[in-house]
Each structure stands twice: as C-alpha cells, then as structure tokens.
Image (cartoon, rainbow, N blue to C red; front, side, top):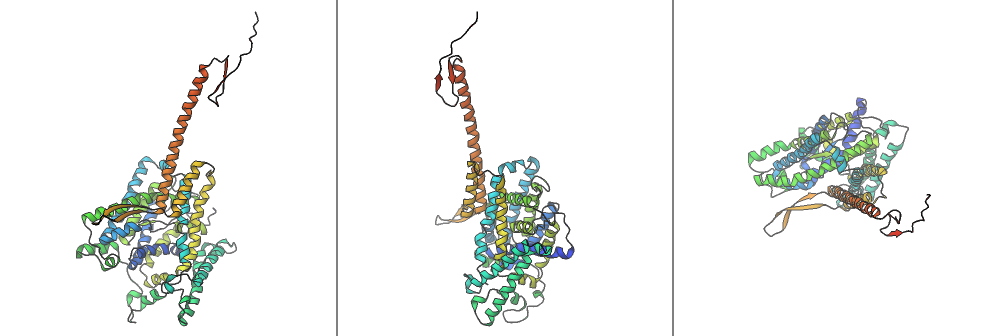
Length: 522
C-alpha cells in the first residue's frame, strides 16, 4: 500500500502528538480490558504504564524499525487467572518465564537462522491465522456496539448505543476515504471517537435530566469519583496526579508482610504468598502458552510486513530482534505494570488504515501512555468512553486485521486440496472457538480444577501446522511410491522383447502385437 509516512517518516511535532494519541485510543480498549477481566480494575493505570514501557523496550531491541505497539496480552488471560492465586509475585514470575521463552527461541534463531520458520509457517498458514485474529474478535466488537454504560439497563441491547456506534464507524470510514483533507485521513479514529462521544453525550444529558435509563449511554462516574469521594468531599492532589501501583513494589510488599494485598484477595479470596509449588504451577501455566504465542508473533509481523512493504522477519530488524523486544518488553511491562505484553493487531490495523508507519508515532504513543498513567483526570476521562463508541472503532480495526490475512490468499492456490484442507482447518477451528484445556491439577474429589488453556487462535494455528506437515509427509511418501511404480514398469518393459511386444506404460496390461515381416537385402 502507499504509505503517507514510512518507517523513517518525521511528522511535525504538533501532528506527531495527534497521531500518537490516535494510536493510544486504538490500543486503549484492549489494554485496559485485561486487568479488568482478571479482577484487578484498579490496575488499569499500571497496565497502560506497562504497555508504554514495554513498547519502548521493543523499539530499542528492533532499532526503531518495526512500527507496532505492545499492549496487555489476551493470550495469557488463563495463565494470569492461575497466577493471581499467588499474588503479584505469581504474575511477575509467570511473565518472566514467558519472556525467557521468547529469548530462548530468539537465540535459537540467531544461530540456526529463520528460514525454518517460513517453512514451518508458509502463507497458507499465516494468512488464515491473521484472518481469524480479526474474525474471532468480531463478536466482541458487535457486543460492544450495542451497549450503553454499565449502569444503564445492565449493558443489554440498546438501539441508541447502536446509533452512536454506527455514527462513529461511518465517521471513521468517511475520514479515511475522502481525499480532500489529508489531515483527516491521518486521524480518522480521533474524529470518529469524538463524533460518537458527542452524540452519546447529548443523549446521556437528556437521560440523566429526565431519569430515562435507556438514554444514559455514557457513565461519567469514573470522572466524578476522580474528584469527589463518596461522602462528597474533595479527593485532593491525587485527583490530578497519582502514581500507578507497580507490580514489583506490590510483590515486595507481599513478601515483606507475609500476605497478599487486598486487591488480589478481592480478585481471588484464596490467594496466598508464592511458594515453591506455586512457582512450578505458574511455570506450567505460562510456558506452554508462551510457546504458542510465538506463532502469533510471527503472524503479526508477517502481516505488518505486507502492509509496510518490508520483510520484518527475514530482513530488518529480523525475527531475532523482534522476539527479544517482545519478550524483554513483556517482562518490563509486567514488572512496572501488571500484564504480559504482546504486539497489537489494533496497532497494525491503525497503521494500515491511516498509512502512517512512522516509528516515531509509536514511540510518542508509548511516552504518552506513560504520562497518561500518572494523570488521573485523563485516565478517568478515557474510562468514560462508552463501549458502543469503541465498538464502532473496532468494527474497522478488527475488520482490517481480518482483511490483511485474507489478502495473503492471493498467492495461494485453493484449488489444491492441500491448501484447501489447511485453510479450512484453521478458519473453522479459529472461528468456532476450539481451545485446548490441559488439566494439571485434580482436587480431592477426583475432579480437574486447574487447567492450562491454549486459546482458539493458537489452537487453530497449531492445527494448521500439523495438518500441513501431515499432508507434506503423505505427498512425499506418495512421490516415493510413484517412483517405485515407474521403476517396476520400466523393468517390465525391458523384460519383453521389443520386436514382439508393445507396452503401455499407462496400464499394467501388456498388449502383444504381431511384428511386421522383415525385409532384407542380400
């Protein structure tokens, strides 16, 4: 595609701030969702801080040649659920182990090369995998686009919310497709979210004024509570400036006090301080997932390579550096934040839609996340963006991820059964939600109560790799058998005198023909 800003592009400082904020908005919903899902919503600022730090680490390792943002990883949700049982120490240990898996694979590739990766995961596997990353998120986007605020009708279907989401979507589309104003084309998400938020605010004002819950699209409670306590007293200085709860500091407190924090107990009432057995349990939960997420790392960078027209895997910065950046960045993001990080498809889609691949934008977005995590009012304001508005944005972001994968199909012959079976296996397993749950602990009643969950995307990818390998092995074996058949036919042909027989190599039947009379001259 034609990029407005290439990797080395240098937007003006004023534009750079706007572009960076757009990247922040693109990754915000997913980044803050992970700590909320695992029961630690108070750690949202820490998750944003960790995403910013992790991204900077990634950019340093990749020498600022790969324009992608790192954020909280959904792949580790199951593992994080297990790690919380051992407090912040469990989360940090799990993240460190997962990051070391990336480092180990990077070292293997450093000495063995990366060509085997391309053979293991060719376009026929990477293409549908990237597609299902976007398609598997479709349900989440469509679920959000019809939701009002959390307090309004319990988040059930709301037609006004759908209207706000569609206005957001249409605004993004119009800004991206029009050719008159270049600046609008570069910031469609900011304009789209702004339009959706304004419309949602108008309905919400009437809803609160006339006590109509159906019109309360936005919940301004986070913003109000940022300044006012429950007893209507002023919060104080922290309403303007506050520091996130670093996971490392919280872990040290746990070890010093001999018990986990109240926030952890709220998420898991049975949580205890880490033990030797706990370390082993956390390792079992994180390491297998990290091995599989490695394949998703390949898919993301193959997809980004297609968009920016540079091979980030075989060329610069190379798979070794991207893996090191992702692994070490994930460790740093967890230690200073709360969640293991990974490269974000939303960030890649933002690059594709805006045509802005400037790595300076990604760096500025990382700095912005770090700053935002300390600014209480801005953090509170971002949390008031309604689900329906973000759903309208995600309708485009997730769609572009899916389309990026489908574009890789152009060089794949789907008329060939091998390719057809591989693509079918990946798409159906991924969209259908096939996940692998490996039990590793049985309670006193003989029931499995702890499992390692491999996500549906990772499972689909593994199934595709295995299917591709099996078919290749069958084809190779069939080729050898075919050579043997040819040799047998050749021997059969040689065994019959040429002057008396004619042999059909297409059939095992030997047809005897009468030889013509010989004419000799004496």
